[in-house]
Length: 170
Image 1 (tube, rainbow, N blue to C red):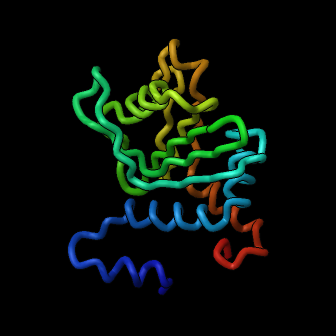
Image 2: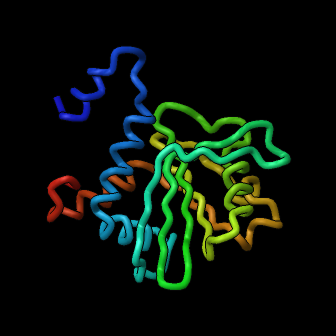
């Protein structure tokens, strides 16, 4: 049994699989920023790598916008800062659940309302097949401001298997 499965089994109540997985992935990416940058470039989410600061947060809370009924908490927020700009990527991960009520649309609207990013990206990454249409998530007014990317966790795993020089990736 793996170390991570053993740790998850220590949780006393219902197993928070998605949150546990999110924390592991966010930590892994925070200590392997070269892998993070390469993975984002591999999927054409970013095109440069001259970042001087990379900040990764989990479960960051955003107050509701005027047209939202409640606040939002994307699984992972990545802020990539260069000398002149900041790019923001929100990641929503699904392992054994489906998208919440207008969840991706709310995240796109939150990204749109942030004042500081030069580039804004929304990633929806799932274990199971759950296709989303970009035009349904991003209304016409947001299509030019935000890029939407749908990925699967098996793609991430496949990518990591090629990084055999990193002990955590193994």
